[in-house]
Picture 1 (cartoon, rainbow, N blue to C red):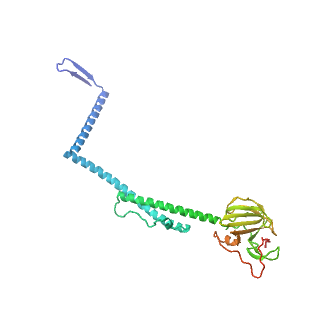
Picture 2 (cartoon, one colour):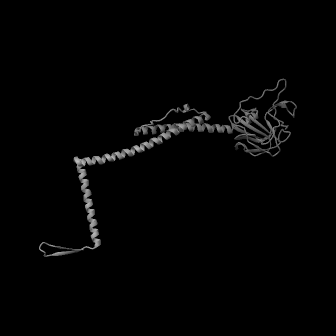
Picture 3 (spheres, one colour):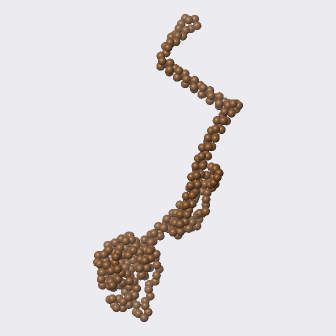
Length: 327
């Protein structure tokens, strides 16, 4: 495309040649310039009209602002409704957690009153009407406080349950020799060495030499030595004045100061010390007084407080270490 430009007197002329690419570029540039000018003019007119409150422009501005406000309110309402539904679900779960906490608390021996926890608290949610932002915020604050209280309560209950479990594990309820019949039981009998009435202070489990002896409960070994009457003897302290004694072993597998778990092998059956045959002599002492081990083995973890049996009347009673003749 050729353009010829001349002056008014036709004295001079100037020819301009535009190719297809140059022509397209020029049109695009011109279009952009016009668009920018139109946008600037539109923006200036609306700003000036809004500031000076021109009737037509003011109406258009109010319409646009109103539409934007409606969209924003609709968006906020949808989000508030979604949050309200979630809060309702959280409150329902909190009620379930309250019921579970009360059941677990009864097992752990903890009541909500111990922590001044109010289990009757609900929330600010009201069915059938939309909630305001302040109501949702208030409900969230209530749930946050309630969650903290439940956390404290469950922490105490966990501590109580762990304490109960540890105490139960420290009570001698496991038979120290498996599949072994009881020869002599706890109580008064005729001592085979002296022929006199004497208190047999434990249980005798008949077993072959070398049979494993296990701890009836967890604890700490306080004695592991050769005793002149009990032979190779192990004593385990379970706390709270509770001690178990294992006598006449052929071999000791633990030493003083060892930490023992329930069911851990501690010795082997033998016939050392004051004994007439291979067996385990098993005793339970509470505050240094021998008790009937069967009361513990059958108690399932409870600690019976029982006095030592009284001596029979008209008989000279004597308490001797057991001869432990199995029969």
